[in-house]
Length: 245
Ligand SMILES: [Mg+2]
Image 1 (cartoon, rainbow, N blue to C red):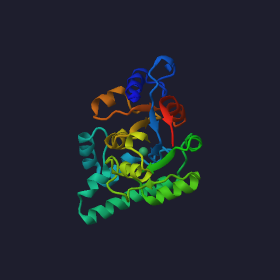
Image 2: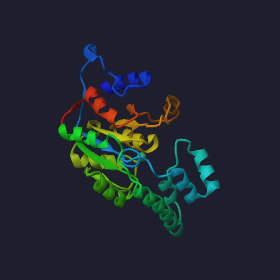
Image 3: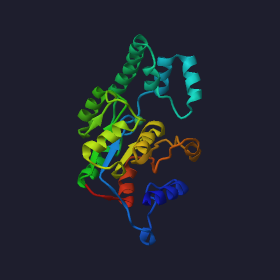
Image 4: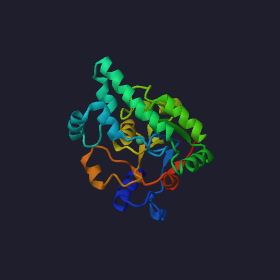
């Protein structure tokens, strides 16, 4: 598959989201791409939720430090809460919702998101959304951005990312194979893992250079592509895929 070539080239070059720029002598068999599924917080919206503060408030400082040490790639707070008593769970979800509501008040659309969606529309490529946030946040995002994603699955759909179930559900709704879809998100732990487990292409949005090559060596998953802004996704898709509805 051409993505393997893309991937190895990408991780050697690291700077270009568009690994094959002089491809006249390269095997031009390209994968067909029919749909793109996006994460919401930190991908389609500018990150405003302080997740570390949220986790500390839910877990307490000591438990937060312990769990963080055991999970260097990130804490799956929803997974931890699931094991708690109903009363403890209610309190935890209350804290999480407070943080998420504060995030909603400051919600801003990620630069490049509207343009990327217009490009996908022009190619008749489907777009979906998967978030671990609540449906209320997705509704507000749809309202503020003026762009609709369908299906748009919030955490009311279980199991959540990184489980591949929500992405497989979208593929089945669209009647596409997972390898005809790309998952785009800012979390290696949630978005890239979800995409990989489903068998989709994956693109990590790493705006601030949080992830180095060493991070990919230390985890089981590695994105097919890595970009530092959504505006790079447009050229990446055109250079590496046959965009066919
Ligand atoms: Mg995110």
